[in-house]
Structures are given as C-alpha cells and as structure tokens.
View 1: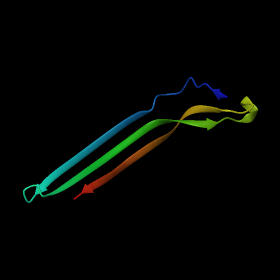
View 2: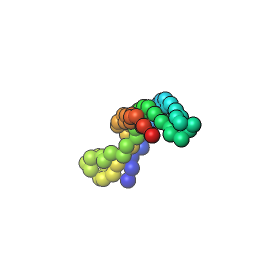
View 3: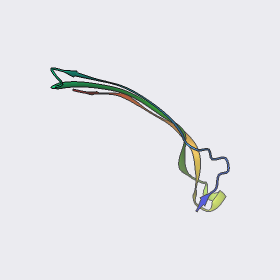
Length: 75
C-alpha cells in the first residue's frame, strides 16, 4: 500500500562538464582530462510509513540531495 503525497516536487538536476583533449607525436599519444559536477536536488525516495497510520506501507517523499563530481584522466 502506498500513500499519495500532494507536496511531492520533481527531482531537479544540474550538470557541468569541462574537458580538454590533446594529441602528441602526430596523434600517436593523446591526453584527455575531464572535470564533471552533477547535483540532483529533491530526490524522490520511498520511505516507510508508521504502521499505526496506515496499517503498513510506504510513501514517496523528497528526501535528499545527491552530489557527484570528479576528474577523469585518460592517457
């Protein structure tokens, strides 16, 4: 059983990526560097609801922010 949630907001994501590719020795060797940064807000999660409120079940809630960032290097 799942309860409805009229206050549920959509998940929103922002992503930025910046990269650089270089070639050396007549393109026989390459170097690639990429920086990325992604942030997702209002992540929708399924959370349990108190059995005294519904008997048993769950509800969808905006419950988190997820951040993912890093650097990739390729040679």
